[in-house]
Image (cartoon, rainbow, N blue to C red):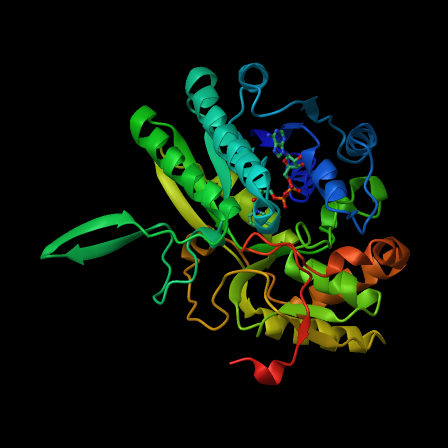
Length: 399
Ligand SMILES: NC(=O)c1ccc[n+]([C@@H]2O[C@H](COP(=O)([O-])OP(=O)(O)OC[C@H]3O[C@@H](n4cnc5c(N)ncnc54)[C@H](O)[C@@H]3O)[C@@H](O)[C@H]2O)c1
């Protein structure tokens, strides 16, 4: 298949290009290198060194025996996007090109407005360009499990049957997002559903859990094929951040009680799920929602597992609870479904500790890079709009 990846330079985009090429798909992609700039802006750097796009493309060609058709450009530049899709005529478009950080979107008015502008208008442009130049392509759009929030009932995949005043309907499940970033994803979901109904486009909206991991098998050991891995308060997702902390002997930073529970999946599972989604095209006009995660864990439980695996490798790391900079429930019910992908053949990796071992081993040689930016490990972006560094709290005082 011909697959277009919007956001091909990102944490998921670069490995996805490789995963798909290894399965015989033809890949094209666009990126504006915004993620590289955002991480610098917040004082971070990728723990794993990453290469320029020219070097990446050269390595890709050598390893997979085919080129990636790459163009640098912004999804907000409609003419650029439309022309690229018209030229490439994709069977599938994987749209990853959004600003992906909750904390970054909560810094201040301009970061919140930027996030929603970039994400909502970028996705809107993809929909209009599809309608105009490739209306039969399948849009695979990355949303997040965070769109649902933490309701006190089970979470279905996008829709549920509801009975109200004696009548029944099958309706979108309520979204209760927890940041301006997460709300941008909800707005995207609504626009995509509408475009499918209105114009007969086809789309899969992926409610993805938090991704972790340093590698997929397809990368081999060529560092140019490696993906980024961030550890700062904005772009370092929790397991990635914990592993970076562990290798420099920095206490693991759990926000609040750590009872917050979320769906997680290793990078290799994310690739597997996206390939399965691409290869199982929905009907024209269909809008479907997949929940995509391997397993649910609490943050405190994850810290404990990282601590245990670190100890096996001779790293004796402490766990600190920090006052929570976010507005979120710390103890709550959480039971989302994830049946659609399993029905299509997704086989979860199901070995968190093995993945953590790989990550810690990959990160140990990068200690100096992490240490050099360790100031970004303690959060100071607060959901109440103030900037204040979190302090350590006594877990015994947490209710
Ligand atoms: N990584 C996760 O844990 C996770 C979890 C759930 C959902 N997601 C979603 O998956 C997608 C990819 O995530 P990621 O971790 O790879 O993020 P990323 O920031 O590494 O990748 C996104 C890429 O898109 C590019 N981009 C952003 N806006 C653009 C624009 N307007 N024009 C051109 N390029 C643009 C960035 O430069 C970056 O390279 C995002 O939409 C994110 O919200 C990620």
